Image (cartoon, rainbow, N blue to C red; front, side, top):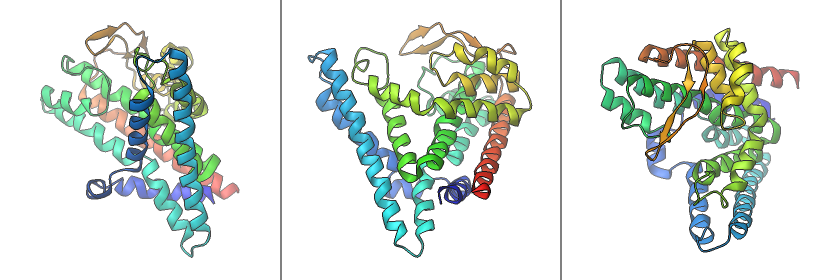
Length: 310
C-alpha cells in the first residue's frame, strides 16, 4: 500500500504543496516537532549540567520524538484501515512530509531577484533557505548558496522522506521528519548544542545514509553527467551525507560549490566541491531548478516502478 500512496502523495504535493492558507490556519505538522524539541531543549539542556547528562537527555529527546512520530503514524494507519477512503487518508497524511513544491517556490525567487539585479532582495530570499550569513554575500555567493541548499534539500526534503515512506509507511516518514527537524534545530557543533544535540545529529546521519547516495545518483542521471565529481568530491563535505547531492549538482552544472562559508560572522574554511566555474549566476539557479525537476520526475518513476513490481 505504501507504494501507490507514495506516488499519489508526490503528485498531490507537487501540484499544491502545503498551501499558505492552510499553513495560516493549522500550521505545519513539522511545527509540532519543533515545539516539542524546544520544550525539551529549554528544560533539559541546562548549561550547568555535565556534558554526559546533557547527552543522555538528548538521547531521551530523540526517543520521545520517535515515540510521538511513530505513534501518530501508526494511529493514522489504523484509522485508515477501517475507512472506506483509507488510501486517501494516507495520501493526505503523507503530503506534508514531502517538499517538492515548497523547495521550488523558495529557490525560484532567488533567481528572479538576481536576474533583475536586486542583490538585496536575493540575499533576503536566500536567507529563508540557508543557515549561513547572507548579508555580505555577493551575487555569485547568493547563487551558490541557493544551488547548494537546493541540492541538499533534494535529499532532506524529498528523497529521504519518500525512502522512509516506502520502507516504513507513515511511521517511517514521520519518524524521519521528526529526526531531521531535530537535527536542524539542535544538531549543531556549537558548545550549546554539541552534547544535547549529539543523538539527533547522529540519528539523522544514519537515516540519510542511503537516501543521500540515491540523491546523488538521481541528480547525475537527471543531469546526464557529474559522476566524476560525485565520486571524487562527495567526501569533502563536513557531513557524511550532504556532500553526495551537492557534488552531483556541482558536477552536473559544471560549477564549484561549498568553499569558505560564514556562520555568525565566523568564516569556516571549507573545501570546494567541483572543478567548474566559481562565479554562479541567476541562469545557473534556473538550470539547477530544471535539473531538480527532472530528478523529481525520476523519483516518480521509481515510486511507480516499485508499486508496479509489487
